[in-house]
Length: 407
Image (cartoon, rainbow, N blue to C red; front, top):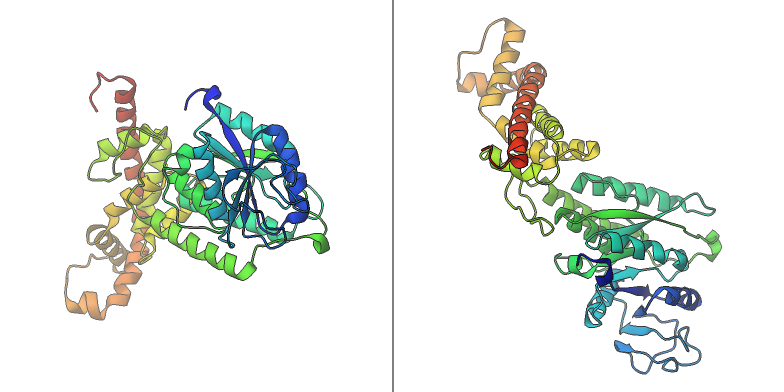
């Protein structure tokens, strides 16, 4: 999938009880390519005799059906299974038609089908990227919940991947089937749209924005099937699961890259070669490594990895490097150095007695000395680690540019 001519999209419209707006959306979308409507168990439309995935003739729908006389593909779920499941149904059917991509657009009328060409142009330029419509919120009637939800979701995406996306909750998207087929996805409702972006990013695929318009009707005219309690609960559980996985210093399998391996301080040159092959810069790796050691030196029991993840995610730095270098600070050596430094700062002498009395009964004093000593040693160790990572990264970068130079 390298040439623009090989890009064959199918427009997918998932629908659940949006009969009033469905016809207008589909009719406009047909101007830009073939359309599949996935009816996710709607109860506000007449039954369709076929009820299965099929090529529908214009007269296949009852006259009272919103799709009457429209030449669309149609899929029907016997009951509501969730938006994520509807999207996957659309992707599976697109594959049977020999299509390479699906462009999903919501049926509630918030999205303008005239923006579809922007997605078609984007996937021709970058066929293996997922494109997400970034809604223009400079428009009337934008709900406060939508603004907060987007900012909140974008924050967690940055924490979990170290990357930015403009609108991780937008349903107007373009998915390459080749990407969807590589991902293991567990969500089937609205949370699917968050999970798929995170896992695609972990797998090495690009997630990019496409600016789109959005229309929000006045509050009393708005129809939404987002269930605040249940769907927010699903999102909370999902974000907890994804964040926990992101904390683990075990890299996810990369499908979009040839190189694969584990980032570890036990194999620094190999790890740096792998990171630099992913277009990381030596300076950025050095800063990430320094931050990892700085945080790892602090006596913040049990939350070192989470803190590193949050800080490096917010700074858009390499989390794997920070997590790997923080392992250098594991007990007993670095904590012992901090305690000795802290003890000297308090008493003018080093702690020479290692016993139950000094480490057990006087444990709170040792923790205080650890904290005090870490304020002195954390910047020093972070600087030294950053310097070493930078020098090694430059050596590896030179070897990548000149294969005759051995790392």
